[in-house]
Length: 289
Length: 316
Picture (spheres, each protein chain N blue to C red):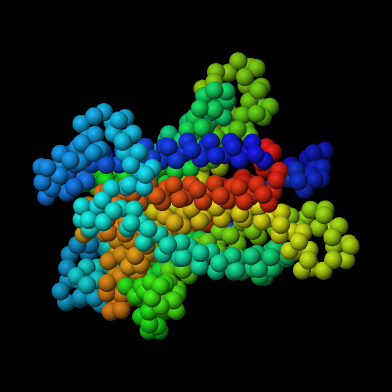
């Protein structure tokens, strides 16, 4: 870049400089990483058994023995929060694997092929989008008994497919009409190669930022389902059912509601912030779930 | 315009059809005999036989659907075997509570979001704008079930305000003041979620609109700031706001469930969860059908409103 012949002034709108990610972004990434590590290594970490009852400490606030206190059965809150993150992370990542696994290839294929395939798939997806997803999830989960984590992941994942499809298709559509795709076609590249090598790398930034916001939305949904008694059954801890169980003894031990709420709130905030910064960084239009 | 409405109506009919098929099929997701699902395990053989005849349960699924949709179109959603009341009657008493809740929360959300978004958009990246944007971003990450639990903790437990805690619901007909008090916390909770969304959408759109040439024109004519903001900037930007509101209100009908359930407010959400836990599947099916169709109708209505505010949309 120091070559004087090239060192021309670049007009502002052509500048390739990207919005900086900022230190808060990295703090959020670190927090998210900590959550993921905690969930994976929960049984290796020196944590008290989340189901063990300590009769000397019932409904206590934070102390040296139990850093975040105990619930009405004398179970350690810190340990339950760490173990509880497993449910949130599993539901969040699992259902997004389904949503993106089906919605993303379909969206890219429809945007690239156009024509009848695009028309049919898009029409079906838009009808599904009009269906209120939350109601559909509640309805199917209440009838499809017995409820397991896998069923919850499948139902939420399936419900997210039309949303992923819409975002990915519209992103891929603007790229599929660009010159470099035409050039690749003229050069005789196979369709699969164009989708993998030309479309995918350009759709990826949008997909990643949408993925993070998607995980946040799904984790919130799982929490709401836990409140309605439609998520994993107690005593398995999840952030949602911890907050739910705290309701009955809210006046005696408010910590029971406060700590899981902080854990869930910070987790969601990190996801949303990382997604938002990435979007600004790659200068992609706002997407919402 | 007429063609646009006709096309949208055709789509609407298609979607309602899909919803009806989905709701119909729910009963068949359950393991076992649909008659047991509908009548419960304690039903007499005679009652079961009567139901089989009435719903054509021996015949193919398509026939069963046609029989069922025929009943539904005549306003017959079945009779719950647990409460022994018609499903439609139960829904009729619960629905107005949801509508009141949504109405109050939306009035609060708009009353907060519109003036604040206008202030913030006047100086993008100013102190007020940055504070509000950061605050709304944080609120966006807090789910309604956390907000309601913390509000109950603060308002009804810490401050000890009467008629705000769980199970304090009083109907509008018996005492409207206590009714409003008992709906205060859930309305605020739902309003917070909507406020954040409306504020962000309107602020972003106003900032773009305020850079248009007709705003410069209005300024150079010497119009007052107030008039420019309301008459010249708000109207074009309200299109985006209306579109968002349609989607959001539809979501509220469904999302208000948790809040209702927590405070035992006997709206549709509370009724739905109670029905799920008592295996009253006919009631669950009825609520799912009514709420889904309601959400779709609300979306349709807002699309229509948007096309009135911005006639260009209908000419696409």
